[in-house]
Length: 254
Image (cartoon, rainbow, N blue to C red; front, side, top):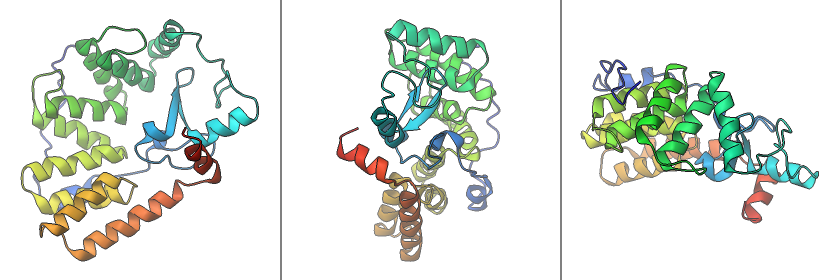
């Protein structure tokens, strides 16, 4: 496929407050560590690592625990030896892409988008990989497409298309997709709907959403009750993501 992603963008977010609550928001599987089964603190990339062998995102606490058990050169989840170099890592990812792994497609797309693992930056190829992964149901791919189209990052600006992809990500449980829908509504001065989106994402552990609601409260666009409800939900979500192993990993600077 080309950059001209043909996803239907007819279902915008202009339908009133109910449209925020009508978007389903189940728990996102990739936001949970497959070893300890605890939700990973947001932003997940700061508190976990994706293993290219199995594309599982393992939290820093479980990585630390594996290291202390002597598992240093293997994946903490599937025990596959780590790739020797960038070329080996790309080969591992490509094998999974060839088998139709949506997570691998998104990961390889991010690598091309940023120019990592020794690959030259190639935005058209990245968008193609994101689109293929999104068609297979990847919430991360929908988020990346939403970011690209809404902000004109490497592609021609298409805000409705970007919002559509953020909606798809949010409906699949992606907390940042939900947060970004709030930003889109804030940009249009639809403050009530922005708060509704951020109430949901704050209760999923997104500190940026909580900060957004606080600023809305200061500006008179959210109530005190809404802010404290979001604060309690955020604190509950943050508490669920804590463990002694993760605390120790943070102390060690992981």
